[in-house]
Image (cartoon, rainbow, N blue to C red; front, side, top):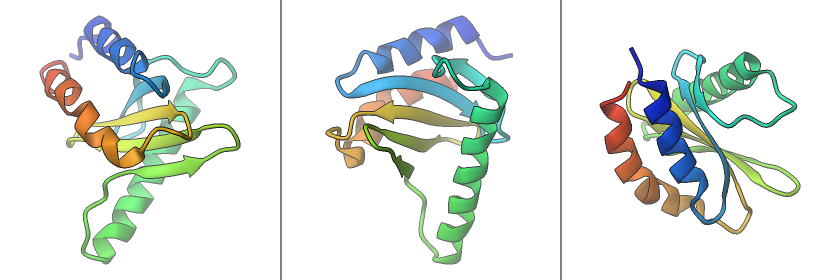
Length: 119
């Protein structure tokens, strides 16, 4: 069983990083695991949307014989980024437009190592 309080603590640490506004963790099957959601969203719908989005992008990248790094949704004032975190989870982050997406994998690596033990 996942240790939700410890996962929430890690996600709060991620949200404290410059340029990260919200961080949630979603299962690859689309289940909301933990994290701060925007107030206007339904947790299950929001979570499953990113699992489907990442799954479709993963299929497309496999057809091209490449590995998926992330899926980015550019919004008017921010970006939503879905980043695979191993075989079980997906980070979904709302970030500022200024944060460089290519840096996120490296920034998240130490957090990912801690999350593996908790899932």
